[in-house]
Length: 187
Image 1 (cartoon, rainbow, N blue to C red):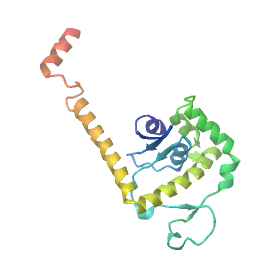
Image 2 (image 1 turned 90 degrees about the horizontal axis):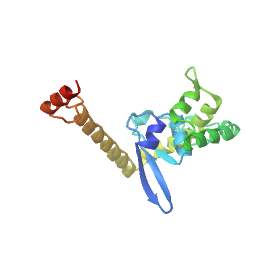
Image 3 (image 1 turned 90 degrees about the vertical axis):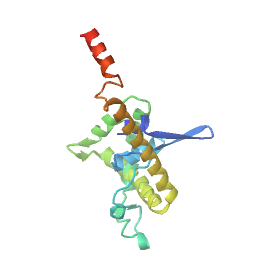
Image 4 (image 1 turned 135 degrees about the vertical axis):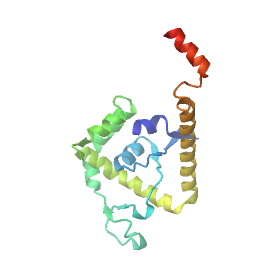
C-alpha cells in the first residue's frame, strides 16, 4: 500500500527547495498506520472518505469539544507514541532508504491480525493526521474537489490501461493478422 503510494500515486508540488508530496488512495483504505507512516515519510495521505458522518475523530485531552464531541470520541495515547518513538523512526528510515519495503513493514507491524506495540504506536500517531484529514475534508470544498479530481484521473488511467491491455485480450494492440503472424513465427 505505502509502496504504491510512494511510487505511483504521488503528486508532487515544488515548494522552494523541497518537494511536498500528496498521496491519494483510490482504494479507500483508511488505516491509521498508513496515515502515520505516510506522514512520517513526508507526504500527505488523502483518501476519499465513505460514510463521513460515521467517521471517528481522535482527541488528545479531555475537554468540551462542543458540537464536535460526538465526532472526537477517541482518546489518543501520546505516551505510547513517545515510548516507541525511536523504533518508529527506525522503521521510517528503513522504508525511506529502501532497506525494507513498506509492504513488509505493514506485515511486520501485525501479529495474528493484531498490531505490535510499535504498530499500535504508529497507528496512534496516524490518528492525529486522520482526524485532521476528516475535519478538512468535511469543511473545505476545494480540498474535496482536489481529492475527487485526482481520483478521477487515477480511474481514467486505469480504464485506459484496461482498454489497451485487456480490451484486445492482452495483445497490446496488435491486429489479429499481426498476432497470428507473430504466433506462427515463434510457434
